[in-house]
Image 1 (tube, one colour):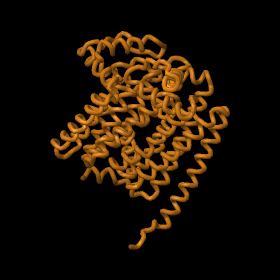
Image 2 (image 1 turned 180 degrees about the horizontal axis):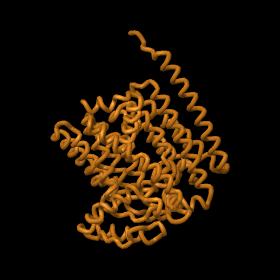
Image 3 (image 1 turned 90 degrees about the horizontal axis):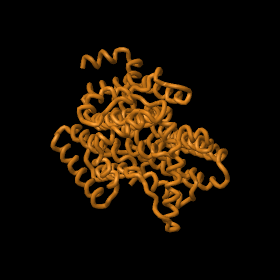
Image 4 (image 1 turned 120 degrees about the horizontal axis):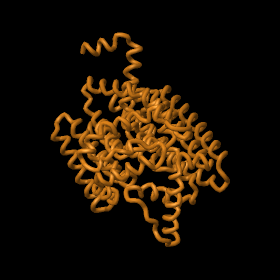
Length: 453
């Protein structure tokens, strides 16, 4: 048999990729080392090397099916930029006390909880009382601390890796859904959007939660194309793990993604069969093996009275609260308030609702989001025009999560942070809208041609 060799152009592109990779990794490590102490270097370098190797493997694997020869270079470049930028931002915020206290005070609680778990494992100290449906990040952080030492830097590297891993996953998803032109637009959106840079960089649950959302969306789109055992098991396990990060969001995502998979099939019965299979496997995993059971139990036992208590507390606790007079403790009141809450969640805060300098960081996030909303509408229109039913896999979870958060959130500071869970699900459609606009500019008669067909 004759050996098949890659064309010189592809080989040259791969060499350039590795050169860029080496440069970016060195730059990220040098910049990171410049803001940490010597005791933190091990926690920075060892997880960083493992994280980069994982990212390289993901990019090489997930760009195999791109028709665009330039895709590997572009996705690799943006993945490494994402890793380095998230790591640097996280290190800066964590090592500047006032900045950490302003942007991510929760990080102190996650670090302390993870340290307590490590002490339980090593010294048989009492296991800390962790909140149900949120314990996953504590244990992930504790496992890392057990390996490399209890330095927050290691957790920042882990989160930077998870944030960067969204780039190849989302590029693959968008390529499958909308083609290479839209996939070309995805990496900078994931890296440069203010909320997707700021919150996943810190020692918070955001990086893990957003990664799981992207992974579930990717596997959902794969299942809409063709049902395979790895995709089905991967989806179920990802949702079970998500139950340990944000249980109530995981329950909503599970139901809506499976509905999206069912609706995306040409034969509805086949889609329903896939959804039922996922539910059965998930039930065994959660109820029999216990993975995510605490989060599931907390979510299904929640009610509107509890949701109302939460939103009332958020609305009056700080200056960025809103709608403190609203009561959603019963179904009628909740349905009546939902349009208003959904509008505030998706569009707020409006510039006139920003009070004081402390709330100014929300302004760039909302301005960029408003700028992208017309592209989201355009992407939905293109999906409808082309009969792309797989868009339901993204639209239904985004609508479900937005509705739940619109009901329970009444604080613009938290709203901007939580909205990233919806934004990340809608990015492929935004990218599709951007690609369609670019095509219109390149081909002036493109829209008339599409309208005629």
